Length: 237
Image 1 (cartoon, one colour):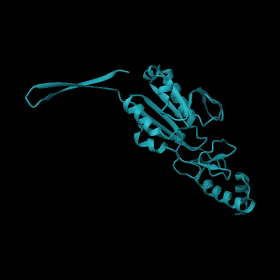
Image 2 (cartoon, one colour):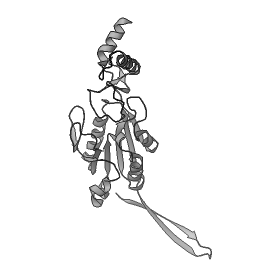
Image 3 (cartoon, helix red, strand yellow):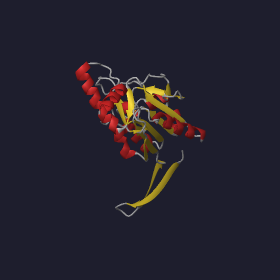
Image 4 (cartoon, one colour):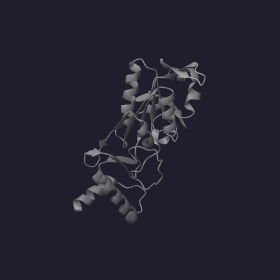
């Protein structure tokens, strides 16, 4: 990537002209892809990274080492598409592990499951503002309680673009904006798939939370069959 150079003149206290020159890299970019589970965030990220690679840019993918659902050294979509990646506990170690020379040649960095990286904000600042690279971040904007998840929302003020994806509500087929957890587990970080989570619309998120709570009180069951309970509830109304 070429450097941009600019120069300017200053006048010292004794009247002598002083020539100063500054240099900096071209500015980078930050792009954020957010949405509930099963909205196609990883698919959109892979599409962007593959497009950049096909355009001749040097690309790399990073994901959290916490996510071992489908593969250890690959980013994998829910429908099975794969792309090799670096699985890391944090982003601050990437540059050293990747190698300084190789890092300097990079143009585009993709980060999947970004909500698991506590140092996401600082990494995006350094990559885009200081190193002049493009970074594309994909992650959940909210947890199963619809609260901010990790540092993803902190990056939005840095972003050139923000894409909010939606899924399809499993209970009615309408647009799903939220992720409903089907178990009584209360840990924020519970990495799982369709056995634990489902995308839902606003109506069924509210009803689903109510059904889960009432089912806990009546049955004490650790796992609730949301679909059947909601259907039964609807038939009684």
